[in-house]
Image (cartoon, rainbow over all chains, first blue to last red; front, side, top):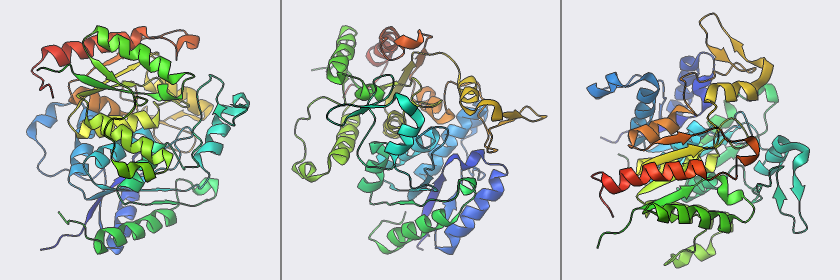
Length: 200
Length: 200
């Protein structure tokens, strides 16, 4: 029997109000496109008994890692979170998935590139030298590759055969829009269902 | 022949002024403690010829991933970077290393926990409800596990048998101190040299 591809839904969405209902909406979109969306909030089946003794935060961490191992791909919400970059928990999971050879997809509800976002964060302290190299007020370099976020993130997406989908949504829709997510799911479904990808 | 353990030196240190000289100082500390420090800035031996055709940012990404695969452990500079959390490139590399079963160590030149750092970032918009749950001005939850950063990061460190070393340095020493790094290297050396760890 061929199983539908499983995609782990990474993102700061776990911090939203009513995150379970939100995850169900994302999972319904995945299902419409032939994918099984796996949320960090799904109940775990067959959890090792030893995990019951872990502190809650550590149990959450090992569960998420186990879910990623069990999936064929990750779709990550890379919308900037409390700073110019994506949520670090999400980015950790991207790196974890990439090392396992999983396909990595990302999306964001802004299309503003990394450089202007970072300049906005570091403010008037940013300085460009004669060669055009930019540094913040502490002398630390600002990446200028014309990418959407840190180069490791886009390296994972490009290297894994995934895709990055971004679009400018109104600021108040930043954490409420699902249209950009659905565009990303559509691309992921095309690649996972129609390419020579081992379905596990 | 037994090789000394190799540790990948992850961190926003690649953005410092004179990053090669800085990396050499870190590598000298590693050597004093019996470890080989591998910097993202080291020249690559035996690089696949195909990488020459990649854009620079992507070549940097695949090189860093190859370096991590070649190391026994990662020592990551988790000092908060342009926001309340660590640099996302560094955190990506932690996740990558963890999925490969590498030991993961972290250090920071501040000991201020994640919660007060995040509250400082979100400002007066933070609200605590009757159960003590904290949300930012957009209604997004603020983690309250008493950890140093996002739970995935500390999950990796704890789960891999690594360690987290933090200390409060003066603000102007935040990117210049090497004492906290050396304490972390000492702990890493003890674990990598004296525990039943396969030396590759």
